[in-house]
Image (cartoon, rainbow, N blue to C red):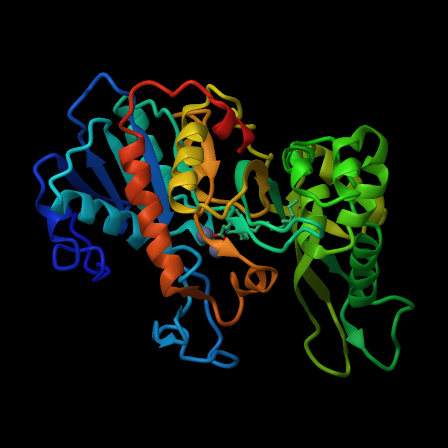
Length: 433
Ligand SMILES: CC/C=C\C/C=C\C/C=C\C/C=C\C/C=C\C/C=C\CCC(=O)O
Ligand SMILES: N[C@@H](Cc1ccccc1)C(=O)O
Ligand SMILES: [Zn+2]
Ligand SMILES: [Zn+2]
């Protein structure tokens, strides 16, 4: 069935070579998502996949330097919702492919491009359907690359150079609805506790008692181990001796929200509603809490802690969505995807001094592809400074024109680098990365 609405930018007008090339098949999945199959010339080589999404979260009209859906350019930056998350990848992938095709490049290794339309609401109609279709076709992937981490610049005290962090797992998630019901009545004769008071106290206990700091129990410690030699003295000594210093380091990491997210299951009270009139005892109070689960925990363990912390059975818990952290993807010298990323980063980002494995603190469409490969990597070739992080889902999301060009260049090189059939022997130089 041909959907009635198609986004103008994924079209034959914008990407004429992509849409007219014989060895590329284009399909619309779930009404709006896109799947491109690029048939390589050598069927012996195992295919890979590039994933992106074109849907976005809402944007308020206030607080932006330019209207959030104008994509206006200001001082070398393109502003707009989706410029970092994740239209940059959706268009960047097609743009890189378009350039290669115009230069008559025929890939040797087949690959798939998936562009989802419902990532921000879990990807059940887009990415999940694409994954099911590929599975039904018997596809196995050598690796998959999606959004989820970036090149970090100035995030860690004591590291001078930008470092590429490639997420080898992503946190699990629980979205839980909490409610308290109590009898309605006249506010002149209030009970000792109202539904609002009971629920507010329970939520406050959740906030006041964060989940345990699990630094060292998951792959987050690998980030620091990989980056140890990047730190200036004496931090480098601390990072190379985490067996001794991890208690101090874990305390330091939990000070800032961005690094706190790496060391524990986070608790975010995101919605609250209650009350119907100023002189009516409220019959019910409701709240939504979003937990992002540390790689070393499971949904069940988190829920048990939640129950024990709330310790009040008048507070009812209803799960809206819950899934465990994702499996850990391979990270060693034989991991084909990692080799390709390293080499491509070396080609395109000479300033990046280190490539380290990390954790994606949000969730991505790639989590629907675990049946097709165990080598799922989440990485966008964008340089992030600390003040860029709040722009994702926030105000003034932007990408520099140069940054976007670098993203296209990265993908342009990555597609070509993936065409080697044998991994180069690791040599001293790439080892250091
Ligand atoms: C040791 C490393 C030090 C500091 C790094 C700390 C935090 C920064 C981590 C990640 C930032 C990267 C990406 C942007 C943030 C979240 C997006 C994740 C998934 C996106 C899914 C989506 O909402 O569409
Ligand atoms: N990617 C979004 C939306 C999402 C939430 C929860 C599960 C799946 C997707 C996020 O991490 O916030
Ligand atoms: Zn998002
Ligand atoms: Zn995203």
